[in-house]
Every structure is written in C-alpha cells, then in structure tokens.
Image 1 (cartoon, rainbow, N blue to C red):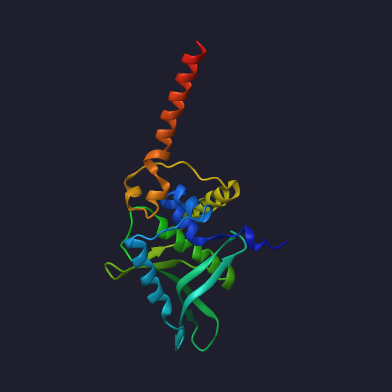
Image 2: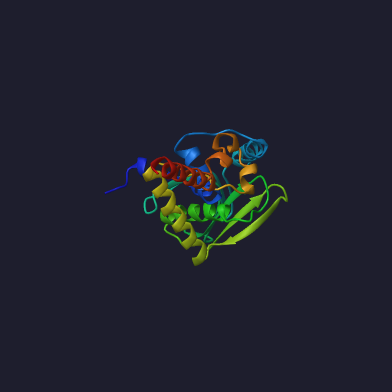
Length: 217
C-alpha cells in the first residue's frame, strides 16, 4: 500500500534536525519561524538560484526547482538544481548529480551533506539510477564542493531520517541543549535555550526534589 502524503516529512527538516532537534520541532511541529539576516539572505539566494529555466545542451540537461519524493524513506522536497547527462544519441540517462545552493559557507556539521544525500535517495528512486556524488554550492566563496555519497554518509542520512520521523511521530518538542550555535539561530528568542535547556531543567528538578524532601521531613 502506498504511504499517505501526511506521513512524509520535508527534506529541509533533516537539515534542521542535524543542526538542532529542538529547532526542527519548533519549525515543523510548532510552526515557529522568523528570519534573521542569514535566513533572509538565504531566501534571496535560493530565489535567484531557482529562477533559471531548465536548459538542455546536446546530451546534458539542467533541471531547476524539481519536486522530488521517496516512498521508501517517506521524504519529500525540492531539489535546487539537478544535472542530468544522457548517453550520446540516446535518451538513456548516464548520470545524475544533485546540486544544493547555500548562501553561506561550508559548516562544521553535516546538515548540508545530509540534505543533499536525501535528495539523491529521492532521485535514485524516481529515475532508477545509482548516484555517486552531489555538489554543494556556497555563495560566500562562490565555489562548488563535490560530496561523495559514500556508505558512511548514506548511513548517517538514514539515521537522521529515522530520528526525524520519530520526532514527528512523538509530536513533542525536545528541551534545548544550549551551545554557541544557539546564538546564530533565528529562533533563539522563541526557543529561550538558557531557560529551557536540559541542564536548567535538571537543576530545577533537583531543586524541586530537595524541596519536597525538606517539606516531607
């Protein structure tokens, strides 16, 4: 039986989950969103990247804003750019390379790589072809980085997909885990990580426990 659309999660949620599970829940479960300078610049950057038309030259085709989905992983989204190369003198696809556009620069975590790999999962299922690499284009250095879609990245992406599905199924926003990344997050004022952090909650629980012990003595 085909999975219903409501069971699908957006590929963008995977990137948010890697960055911070609480951020992912605030955006996709509680529908909180606000722009800061970085996210506003990202929107403009993506609009420019997506504005181009699909082009085809000889045996190569460049698809833009392609709606994609995977029944196997129950994920869906939009691929910024998909480079398709055909076998000469035939319409058989020789290779597919997804390209994801980012306004900033390469990050320390693998959120962008996971998002790109998830797009590859969808494209492999749609076109029935193995995809070995993708590309991340960062606007700040204006440079393409080749990402090898190896077994390690595929396994990490599958794990993130499973954890994100679990987060959506539980429909519960995790407590914050305060870090330096919190200061860069556009939702920091809604999240209030210093108030809702797991460390703060543990301190509150410990205080409540000691208070109850004193009252019951």
